[in-house]
Length: 177
Image 1 (spheres, rainbow, N blue to C red):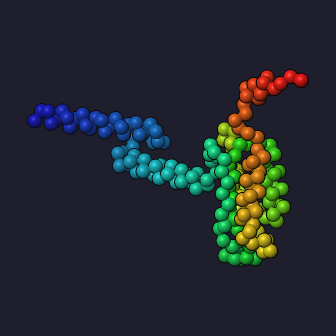
Image 2: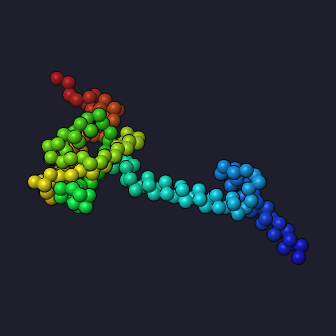
Image 3: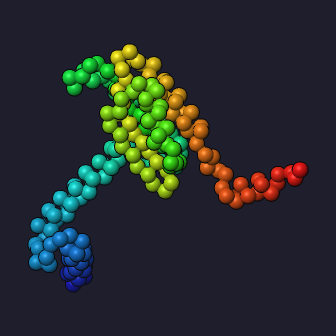
């Protein structure tokens, strides 16, 4: 019987220790009762889950690899528009100063109107997510033209595997004339 009382006492102490730790993590005082504290913890976890889902829904965090996606999302009839075809294009690559002007040039040359743009950079990488509308005259083939144009934009980017050390080595290996 004594062992059971001691085990129960240790269990309560462990629970109370964890509750005290939770009180230090949340904006509440040391007098907050257990039920109120747990309600605050549940609310905070819900808030954090919502924030996390919003971040991942944006799909703007750059990845380690070069990526292009172009998807048709429908027409703007639903929004009272003119029936233009709407695309969502995403480009992930190395960040560079000429990227935005090149993207604008591509969109203009394809007669695409930008409806929404999101950009994120992280560690020298960038992800651009664009929602664009095609003119009525430029229908479904705009997807292919946009995808090919973005691919050629990636192909024009500076190679990532040529570090300064490698470029220096290349110069030293060049034959002298």
